[in-house]
Image 1 (cartoon, rainbow, N blue to C red):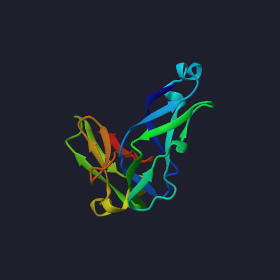
Image 2 (cartoon, rainbow, N blue to C red):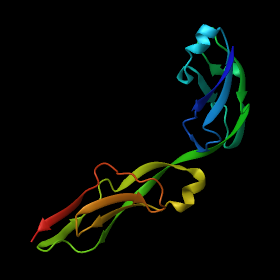
Image 3 (cartoon, rainbow, N blue to C red):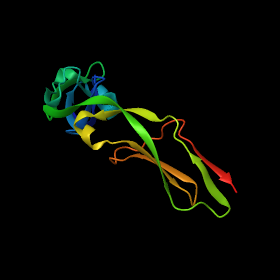
Image 4 (cartoon, helix red, strand yellow):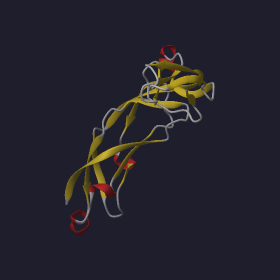
Length: 173
């Protein structure tokens, strides 16, 4: 008996200094054959479709997805996978040390004043996509003095992060 399953496509073996910047497809169509009693009890979660990215280079990489690359329970044979290949864009990660700046906005609640502002640590190390490096200037710590709410974000509007140890001091008048 032959049946088809739509299963998630996973990626393994991503080099430590690389990141996928384009996910080609999320699912693949896997056709399998086997004894009816096995097929009738087979669940999509028992079929694992993975692409090994260990050999990937910076840029667009093509990978074939062969039936032998699909893990299925014993007694089940994978006959076909669609798509049979995917292109994955890989970009190099670089570590950068960014200064942390504190920017105050608004006025403190009545009866309070800003006694001092400090960022600890003064710098943070971040892994960023090499091609985006020019857009990253620093890490800015915004402080809304009206509500004493802090928000951290890259000034280049990349992913928000909260560096451990970032502090601001306020004193009551």
